[in-house]
Amino acid sequence: MEDQQSLLKDLKDISEPALVSIWPPAIGWWILSLLIVVAIFVLYYWWKKIRTPDYKKMALADFKNIQANFGVQNNARETTGEIALLIRKVMVARYGNQKIAGMLGDEWLMTLDSISQTQNFSEGAGKSIVTAHYAQQAEVDVPALFDATKKLLSRV
Image (tube, rainbow, N blue to C red; front, side):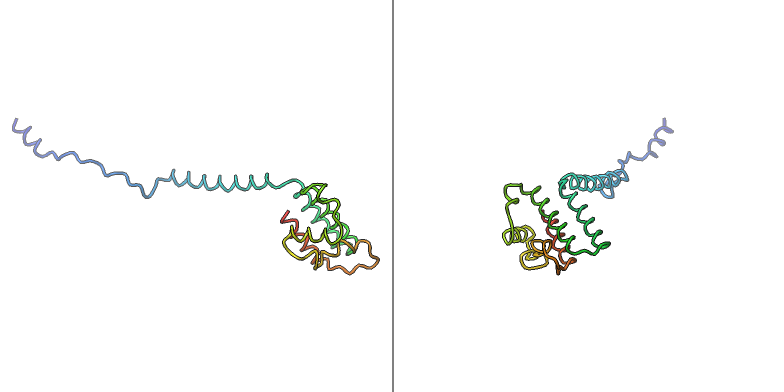
């Protein structure tokens, strides 16, 4: 019995393990956090893509084609007419036929200025979309017209 007493005396008390700390998290939490961030970016991109109207996608594609055609043909009069037609189609698709179809001249240019939040149509190169298509010799700053159209299409 003394042997047992001496053996029991040599035993140490039970020690509790250290508490699990909150930081740094385990690798699984890091992976989960990364997946959540990636999922947020994917959902945002998907939502933005779905939210972009079809007429805007088609208008941007047509605008790129007009730019490419101008690079090949270098016909300012024809390019101005194509841009005027594109802008009219986009505005009718966006704002409806009743509001847009009857607008002509300065009223049309002022409406485009208010939408694009610039003066590019009533005072700048955009003014040519009303007159240049019908003129025999058209002096058009086509790159400035492209910039004005791009700003307009981004605001629609």
